[in-house]
Length: 146
Figure 1 (cartoon, one colour):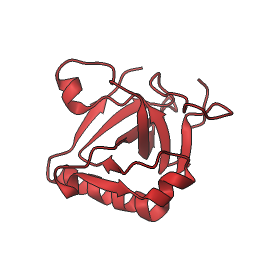
Figure 2: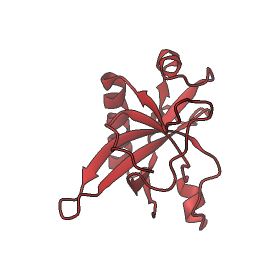
Figure 3: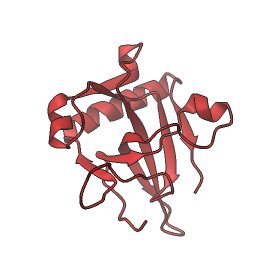
Figure 4: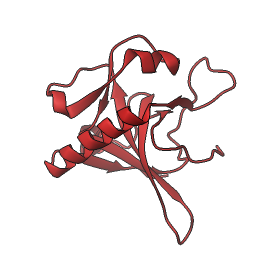
């Protein structure tokens, strides 16, 4: 798939691999889900773009600081479902863009893996939550292979 790298704050459809699944030796995620592109890093020597994504789930966090709610109005604007959702900030997947785990959004025409972008203030809130959890050493990153 040939796609330009997304901007931070873009929500993509992605086969997310949870950290506990990875720890048990899994290499593939159970299901395709929306994921928020938190940040990108470009390697100067070869120009590859590494993307850090956070899972979006319908499961409410056990601890409020483990996730940031995805507002219903943002979900509606992006054409997502009406169920409450949270952006998990205690773990992430990192992969070289575009990677094999991108998935087309069901029913979208033309076919795309991109829902759209969240507002900058929400992206900032998510980034602060992720960095806070990282500082507290409760954040894990799964490095995905291509």
